[in-house]
Image 1 (cartoon, rainbow, N blue to C red):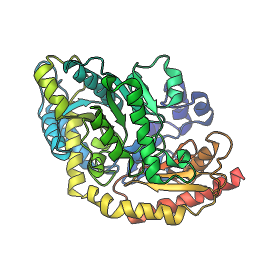
Image 2: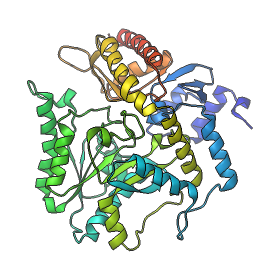
Image 3: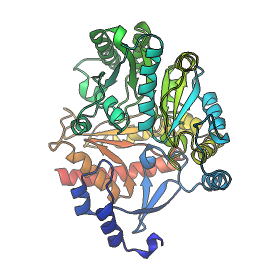
Image 4: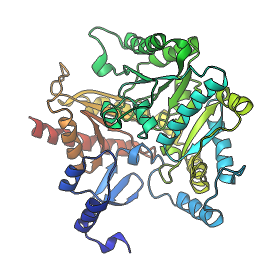
Length: 457
């Protein structure tokens, strides 16, 4: 039985009767009815009404090589025929995760040589939290277990991931977070920079909030600082250039481990394989997922630095942690082929040298002048558009995100998929986008802004 045997209304009714969606007001969704996406090709997705929608979010930050790549389907099929599954327990492994781990070590910063697999970024952030605290216990400092994170950060939706993140709405529904996690201000200059403060000084001040939290807890109790190089799901918040060097200095000064969450920024989105390389950082852990397989299979890889890995091996004994699907052979085979395609087509270099700069210029020249736009910003192929009522004062519209929803809905009506985070519109296109695709995106954004302006005025 295939979906072609059902009408859109039938599919929507079945969806409403049985399917609980992530991050959704289910009553609102069921009143409106779901959009049923049926197929995709290249940079576009298609729904049951055969609308061709330019995907400005690469699925959910992940489909870096675009849709419909036969190579990934074929390698998954061949792996399924040969060995569809075996576990990584019982002193066993399979070829695909072994070879993928080697490849990831080659691509990662030179202090990172070990990999622990999961099925999602949320899972791998759970692993990172446990591994960091276990490391300090093995080093004879079990009291060194406080993690410093940031408000508005997103690190996943498991209990540990939600606790590490800084989303107040998620915390409100958690009913008890993992203890010893502190949150400080994010490096969000658009809303938090003081009048007359330079970007450089704001970056230093935002980093100092981390240092202040370390000193308040006591450096002897702080295990690590966790952060996304660019805060993705929180609204593509790009720190000033002064921020990360200062964070790196602070972590080294107080012997605090550095955990980077590159679930979004990994595998080429920033113009390097990992944002750590663009920022000149050598983190102790790097959480990756999403574009590792371009979303074609669920897979995550926690990249573990030598400092932690060496202690785990030499002093750790058994690490009581793992997942049924750790190192799933089909997912790992798909990841290897995905990375091969990114390399062969030069997508990382394209983002760095061509499409990333062109994307930044297009947002600045075409989108920034619009009356609803308070700021545009980008980092590689990640972008944000701040929606405001008044460009001069940056006053927001009333309604706590209603303006962002208006722009999002208008964009979808113009066959462009982008996302609203409050009144910040965010973009994360597939790395296969060209200058022509970027131009198409900007044309549709402008039409959406005009439609939303009529509704909001």
